[in-house]
Image (cartoon, rainbow, N blue to C red; front, side, top):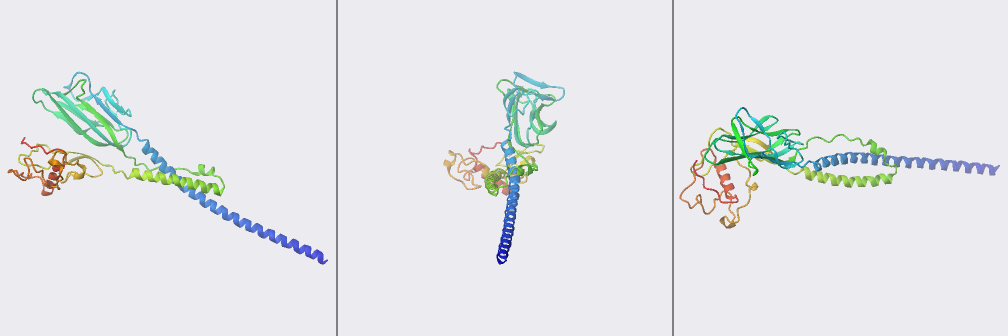
Length: 358
């Protein structure tokens, strides 16, 4: 009888130990599952960030290369006496990206960005000449226009940095009762190129659930995947930050007004009031020209390459301190603008030209 009781006690003890072991296994399993879910959530967040960064980097890398240069060509005068007419530039010198059409004479911007556009015009001087830039059918106020002058021929040009939306169209027109001339030497041209794109669209939503379904349930595999994703994410975000930190700077201005400006004694600061483009706000239309840092250093042959302080004129020339003639400030400029103007002139690559009355 006592032997049977001992056997029963042993069986009860074994059952209790087995039950306790199962409880411990369940607790450990739940802890592992909790850690695994946390790692999956971390993987999901990093996957979203990685996909967004890689998509934006792809858009930057896939920015189209755009540049064109065309000429009217032919061998003679294009003239209109009844209304304005479109100028079709048939001689295509460069058309990288295929944005210019020699059938219509139009340039179509493939993406949103800042483009530099330039044109030239040539014609005999016994008849008025014109070349006018239009965007989406509206005049851009970039014009080359000359009245009849002396013998020979006249050449004029104009250009600017323009902010264009994807699909904007540029074309050149000839005004009423004017003409333009060209031949195989390409005197009358139309050209432009993309300076930099402007991509402001936010990244689209990305559904990571499909990718998460393919993840393995192994904790070790998830940890390995997380390490690889983290390295790629850090690399992509560093490259993306470097791309975003590049400043966008472009300006194009015009004197405007409706009259002649001249300087008969001394120099005069030109204030360009009509601002067509000012990306980055580096240009001030109130008083100051761009900072002197944007200009080139002195020419090696000027003043023996010596350094001059801001506002100091060259040691020789018609406007040097030893010259008997002292420049008279313009009545439309302030002392501050005169100081900046003189500083810019001393930093120019060549000695400043002598201004003559017009």
